[in-house]
Image 1 (spheres, rainbow, N blue to C red):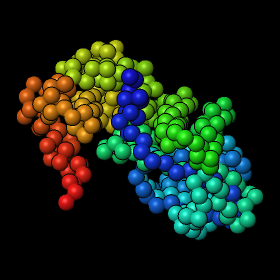
Image 2 (image 1 turned 60 degrees about the horizontal axis):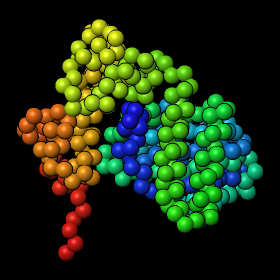
Image 3 (image 1 turned 90 degrees about the vertical axis):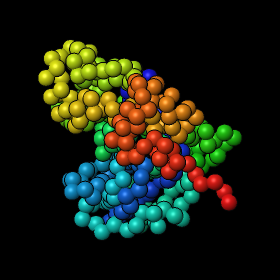
Image 4 (image 1 turned 135 degrees about the horizontal axis):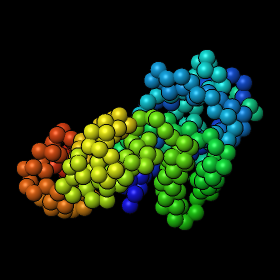
Length: 307
């Protein structure tokens, strides 16, 4: 698979919830900082999105779609100055796929929802993505909107096999949004997704993902990017935020943690499949990245046996 598919496949979407909003007058909703990913589309009117991390408010216009990938509190309002009410309490009366009315509605309509993930390292994987993904291009917005409409219809009128359908649709929406984000002319920014948009860096990242067990060195990865070793190391660190070798180790350990939970393979076999010649070398690398040994990781994440 390609690197983006590799990362998203480890997220394992587990549950999701989508509801509509029809708001009027002065209105505001505040959302708590929950793990997972949130998705919003403005159908008509406009509003302001404010992530409570000190960043500026973002104006959302009709047709805009946005993904939020961090566990950060945020607010959506008619104006940034409006004091918001609790969004969880407000939406509690609206059923899945339904529409909640705020102040009689009529000024701004939208769809919002969230995905939670079964992958144990979901937060680490989401950290590879931009904190806010804003889709603005008209043709791209139309494509994503059609997927959101499908999700709303599925929630409003459940059909046989509906959970599996919605689960795959949720995954598809995430892939689609990030793919569209990649085509919006990324350049000069920092973050893993920016690296995928760079021809030289993406070549090296693809090599790592295609063969994580290979004994990669800074020199061989620089060659795959057609760069000198020093230029490659500097550009990778500046763009991705970590060194090439640290990225390699981190990716290996994310693969290892997923296999520890889902493959049934022994620790030795997993370590060998990722290029480690001894259990001790694998355990040392795993502990450095994950903060505990492979055995401790497995035990801490398995459900307790019933008494």
